[in-house]
Image (cartoon, rainbow, N blue to C red; front, side, top):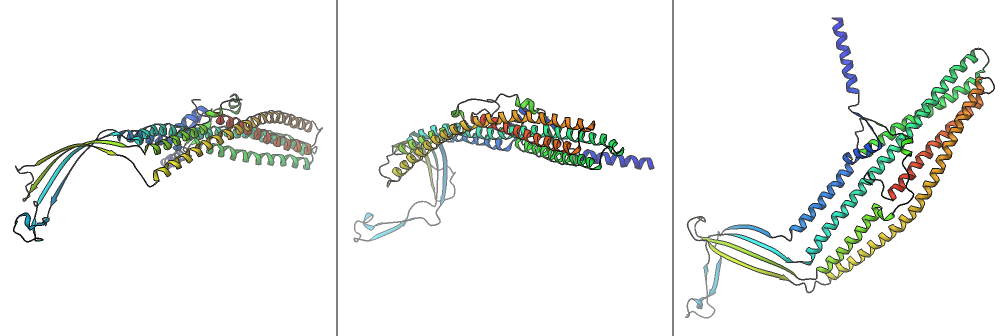
Length: 447
């Protein structure tokens, strides 16, 4: 009985453990992270929907130039028949002048069915509308590419920061372990009276400081992984890990030159100028005549009894025609709309020119930032190697009795500072490279 209860307790504990584990865990390379984001990020899903809307808008506008076919019918029940008033002389030549007679005209029930076909023959706005819809679809694709670029930019940035944080955590873990080992070794000297308690306190201070920085590094690593999950559209409750190291990420060659006119923001503004030109063209074409053709076949029934489908006659009517509309004067509203379109076009052209100037400035700034970040990174990498060597030598001297704990603590803090500067310079280098990649439209995976 006791064994059975024990087994049930173990089973319950096992189930609790299983339920508490993450539902899913996956490791990603940076390219896999990009692909995952393109498929799962909601911003991209929304942008793709906008492309589909733009495609359907073309179909909608094109459909306005195809034959329009309608069938309609109506039924009327006259509770009171309409009354017609005529001069009495119409029926009686002997009637007094001004005398009228009234009588009910028509039947109690009427019904008709109509089949109608209409066809647009010429309309200037329709022609421009087709051009605009097609260009708008291209414009929307560029806007969607911008959204995709922003998503991938955030993924790359978060991935690189995660890799940097991971390196920093590995370094801090190693430093804490080495400091703990050193303290364990020095305890023997303390017990023998060779080492002063003050020296041991200095070493303990270094360990506490290292553990504090280690804790901060762990939090930073977890935060950057959460940032990566958000950028990718990855479930927050599930675990994630990265496979690319900072060394592998740094192997990617940084761009030194490119074409700023390939920048997606510049491309979108170019399309905006073209759309403004078509808007002006559409307002001008609104002054042109429009011509439509139509064909109509109707059948009408007139009854005094509610027997519309009895074997009585329906009277047919067939008509076709043309409808011409020639704009003459619109109270200057068309003129005002055309003038507004001209101003909007000027604004679009100005925005494009300003963007080109801004991108030229960004190009110079980004190249300078990249060059400076690369130099700073190289110096900080040498600095952390040197600080590590100095710290190791201080420990060695301490172990052989030629140093003191205060110097070891100083070199320990110096190493921590060098490591922090090195990590900061690496993040800065990644950011500078990413900025110039975005400038030259080199972010998306197909580039």
